[in-house]
Amino acid sequence: MAKQVLFTGAGVALVTPMRPDGSVNGDKLVELTDWHIQNGTDAIIACATTGEAPTLSSPEHLEALRVAIDRAAHRVPVIAGTGSNATTHAITLSKEAEKLGADGLLLVSPYYNKATEAGLIAHYTAIGDQVHLPCIVYNVPSRTGVNIPVSVYQALSHHPNFCGVKEASGDIVKIARIRQACGPEFSVWSGNDDQVVPVMALGGHGIISVVSNLYPETMVRLAALCMAGRYREAANLQAALMPAIDALFCEVNPIPIKAALRLSGLDVGHCRLPLTDPTPEHLELLKQMVGATVRTEPQENH
Image 1 (spheres, rainbow, N blue to C red):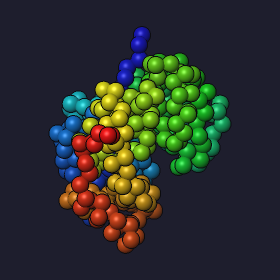
Image 2: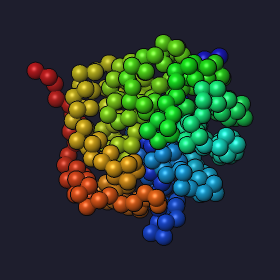
Image 3: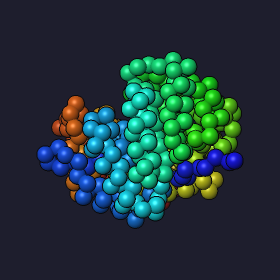
Image 4: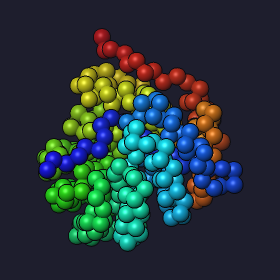
């Protein structure tokens, strides 16, 4: 049986809005979910890195997922971030997310533990065996300390529940190697906003995007241009986005994107410790970026 493609295009790695007292703001999460759907976002990825999952308690994590899933009401897929460095905890979160009605799971590799190749395969297989949802492997070595080898993807591509990978290693050659080793049914999504065009040119299905929190329509257009094979226009738009991308990663994610959203009038609150607010210099950079207009109509090369 062919594997399900969870989504194509631009999915948002959604921030988790907080109230002034630091609690999760469910009302604002409802508002953000509606806003993204209205602006054409192709999928909502909730409670992952940008959603500050490591600082959410299990009840908060599941309640935030419930709010996003219920509000989306299958208008777009909601993919639940349920990865953990503890396999048993990841299984528990994944099974609960399935009960809540999630359309898929995003499973970051076990951070801090630095699992071996055999450990990674065993970890992911243990989760995949306990659910009936399509699962996306999430490789982000800058945070986890381990760059998942292609051989792990190849092994997991034979599991019926693993449908692809969010690849944030920054290694473009690796995208081609994944495609060669795992075949066309194992989807690849860019995990880096600055690499949408090359990843999709190598057969990727889209982007799981931080920038989409602020510029959803632009990121949707960028992915759509790639899917239409209009790579020259897409490359121009990718280049036009680079100042915004650079500003939104001037400090560790999600510090800048939450600040930028506040500056744009979307009160998503602040990050939880140990993440802090941007430095004054970076805040000024973000003010300038939010005040500028990102061109959504790419210029043709002459």
